[in-house]
Length: 114
Length: 111
View 1 (cartoon, rainbow over the protein chains, first blue to last red):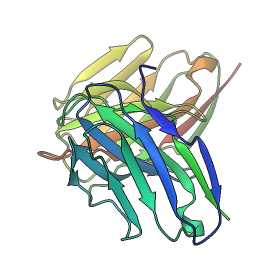
View 2: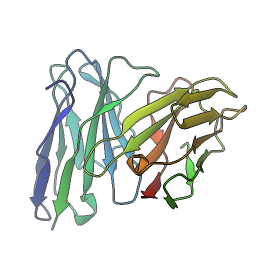
View 3: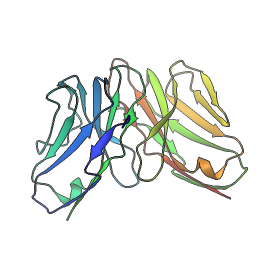
């Protein structure tokens, strides 16, 4: 498809488990963002990639969260030792460049930690 | 950290009414965007404003960026049920790639 694709759309896991969330951006978009959206809140910035490198990871809440984008396209958000407070919708967005343009969002991955 | 405060948090109106939602900050933004989000979907861009005092119109929606580039408003004329959704404002500081979102205004337009 032409849009940002995120998998899985829903993930239910148990406290303490490891999860990976995948984002496939729009082809040719060099900038990729991860956001987290809790119920009733706006999206909260986690990390921004320009190409393969994480240009800004200041939003990652702690060292249990890590993200990679090894070939400058698909990105994976990894969460270790999940906690109930990690339950949220994880949104991925891409844009053609790094500056002031529109972000194109995927539909999100809903993570539930029991 | 740049914070964006949106008001009201919830708004329920009858079809045909007018409404205004607000986005305020103590910080200056180089650009501000408005997105609309429907349940189960990601936010979709409505408009970007970059100049203080700028006004943009998108059909029945009018967006204004404050003169000092710290606040913005979204006015909807003759609201329709299809306008129902979560309206989010988001701003970028000078030289920043990070887009900071407000908590949103959840709008319900009743037929």
